[in-house]
Image 1 (cartoon, helix red, strand yellow):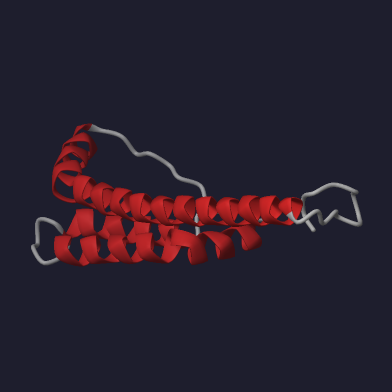
Image 2 (cartoon, rainbow, N blue to C red):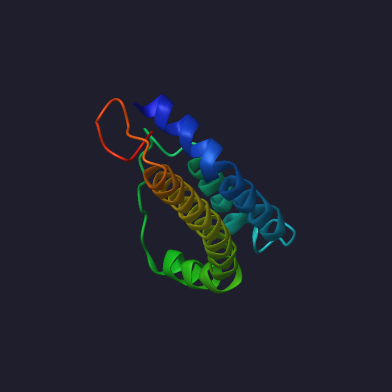
Length: 128
């Protein structure tokens, strides 16, 4: 299940998410101060590419908390905005496609019913 889940995840969004994390890691590693955060971004990239079968451990501490706040402001919110934009675009496409398929099937069934054609399989006016 882990291998199949990882392949599906990678194809349907993990590649974009992982590349975003890699870009964030490269940007953080430009400065000497940001290298620890950049290294963590690369760990997140590996997790984003193939998440199934991996375990995440939290180290904790005050320094970790401070870096989490800085990361949230500089990288986390922009990455979330990009992911949200992709989600909105794809959900709109999926919804439009589903609506188009529904209308096509509904109208095709009504047209065939008006012509008096019965479905041979279920003896009704649908799915002819």
